[in-house]
Length: 169
Image 1 (spheres, rainbow, N blue to C red):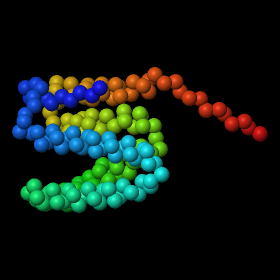
Image 2 (cartoon, helix red, strand yellow):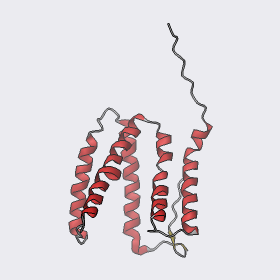
Image 3 (tube, rainbow, N blue to C red):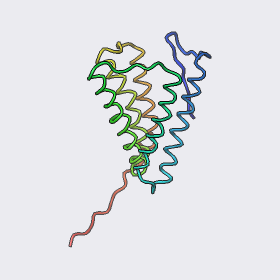
Image 4 (cartoon, one colour):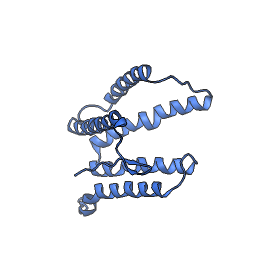
């Protein structure tokens, strides 16, 4: 069973003004989980297909940006490097790594380890002074860790499989 909490500064809060955003978040969650399940089912499909998915996503994002946002260009070389770095590493390389892991790895470990992403990003924001440490952040980190432990509970119960040692000649 899954639960969703919408939390504001004054506690649990659901604001209808953000209904489109909540709907988009649900759509993204189902799209991502569906993609992950289908990727595992069709493991014979090369990971190179991710390039096409990323290209299609880029084009769709461009249309959404042009129609919904005001363009703000990076002003410094460092900002351009940051934009390119984000595109290549956490966004680009992460999709390839996820695709490979889903097809070839232990899906339970991968799913449980994915809880580290929001935890690490929260800690990085705090360390660099972008977010201030607070009991809310500590609680969020505890909830993220609790989610990882809950997702991994079956891993803690399974017995390690022993591989037979090949006989030496």
